[in-house]
Image 1 (cartoon, rainbow, N blue to C red):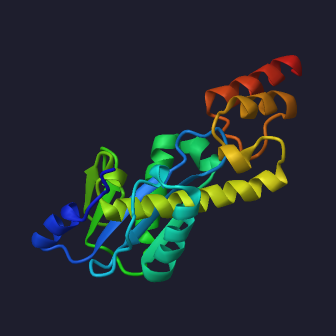
Image 2: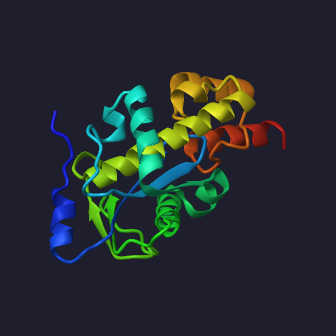
Length: 210
């Protein structure tokens, strides 16, 4: 398995960058819950082994790495909730989360390496978009780990408030069990009303109960 490396960061350092943040988000696709972004700055002399795209790690390894990163690195994690997702659309809500995460770092970076093909317009520092960045850049991989662990924990907490949807296992994604629960139990305040499966259920309910 090819792991992400520090080559992109080294190239930026060679061009004069001094403080580089990695930025990633998780949760664009689910029917429920926030979109979550993390920004993190790694110490080039103290990078933990095994950083990788969070989706390629076991839950136990993700948790261990997230704990290390939280203890040793300047980082910020931001949740943007369903109201903003429905108001802005998921694309702009994800970019808002990334901008807030970068702005929330204790010390402003001079460059943000952003997972994806576009730099958020309102980023508070210069940015560089990197497609599949979480599999290529260790700094973005670190951000992906922090974001996923934080969002997964939040969805487990929300599952206690709204049991039956399986959020502790599906993290709000549109699994068959989750979609069945939507039909059986209805829409919660944490469901994204602008997403088609949720929107369709609300429309059917409106027709049935004008």
